[in-house]
Every structure is written in structure tokens, then in C-alpha cells.
Amino acid sequence: MITNNQQGRLYLVGVGPGDPELMTCKAVRILEQVGVWIAPKAKKNGNSSALQIAAAQVGVAGKSVLEMRFPMIKVHLGREQATEVVQAWQEVAEMVWTHLDKGADVAFPTLGDPTLYSTAFYLLDALQEKCPEIRVTIVPGITAMAACSARVGSPLGIGDDVVSIVPAAFNDDRLRTILTTFDAVVLMKVFRKMNRIVPLLDELGLIDKAVLIERCGMDDQRIYRNIRETLDRELHYFSTLLIRKKVITG
Image 1: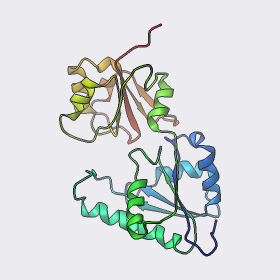
Image 2: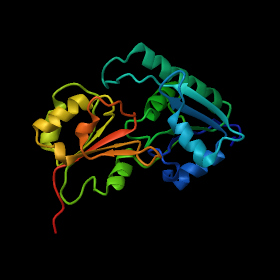
Image 3: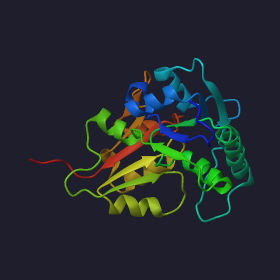
Image 4: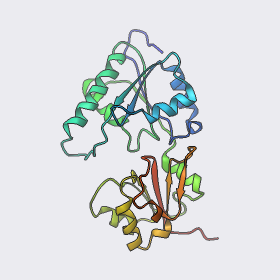
């Protein structure tokens, strides 16, 4: 889709947690209309999971598709970022801007929802440094935690629950405080952290309140209701841990 004599529009499109059928109608419509897709991937020689999901539902025939790497390095807001990370953001922003400046719209498919721990806003920030008035539309998507909650038949929050959403990548005492404070906790990015998380949950008496869902909704999905089974296991990146203290009573 080309605009007439004006800058193109950037679409940050949430493609959901992995099952192509969980893409929204709006996400599908925009991806069908936009001819340029630039998709994030974690490894230089790897593939973009977001692109694979989008392609399974929409198809890429006639599209200009490029996968670009976003390194999996921790980002600490308010601190100076690693040079490799900043360079990657700038390279992707430059590529996107090349198309936008010619009047072409660009779609950036991203896993889950663009507003929740997504690479999409790193890209947007880098682009807004180049052009503060950039035209952008953000298309929300179904989150991994929503899909996982539905899959195990347990609410994320209900009644007067107070819920915390936590990236489990940090290595300090905040996790202990969160687990003892909130009624329900969603732990994301746990795939390399279970050897630290399981003993902590055991210590806090929460081991039987937790369930881990790996590759939710996909053909090789696994649900661990005994999360001790995850110890020393190589989990997929698409792994989410749900912890719920309260039970629903009539």
C-alpha cells in the first residue's frame, strides 16, 4: 500500500502468542494490505517467530519481507544500553525509514502485544529520534499470558485480585517481594530461570499454586502442573509461568 506524496505509515502489529488463529481481524487486514514487512528475530542466523505466525495466516506472496536482528540482551531503562543493542535498533530504524520516506507503509509484526515487553517500542523510539512526527498505528494483540490462562482454565485476575506481570530475567530480591505481595503473578521469560524460581516457590509454599505453559497453543505445547519437572530442562523461549494464590469459592 503506497501513500501519495507523503511519508508512509508504520504499523506495529501484535500477532498474538503463537497460534495464527489468535491473530485479530485488524492485524490480518493490515498485514494483507501493507506490502513491506520488517520482522524481528533474536539470532543472526535464526528465523522470526512473529513472521512465521503472520505468514501462516496471511501469506507472504507479493510482499517485500525482511527479517532483522534484535539481540537478546537485557535492557535496563534509565541506564546506558549495550552498544550492540543500540546499533541493532538504529539499523532497523534506518531500514524502516528508507521505506517510509519513499511513501511506502511498513508493517512490523511482533509477538503477543506491541505494548507489553515488545521490541516494537525500541524501534519506534529510534524512529522518533529521526522523525518526531512519524505516522504510526499500534495494533494490539492477544498476549501470551491471556492465551496461557485460557489454556489451563484459570483466570489471570478475578474479584479483588491484585496481579503482577514480571519479566523473570532479573537477578535480585524483587521477585521474592512480588511473590509475597501479590495475589496472582505472571512470570514471563522464565525459560532459563526455572532452577532459580522453583526453589524460591518451594520456600514460599507456592509450588502447588504454579503452572508453566510451554509453546502455548502450538502442536508441541506442554503444560507442567508439577513445575519441579522443569528443573534442568531446556525450555522453549515461549514459556510462561502462572502463579495464583487464591481459589474461587462459591
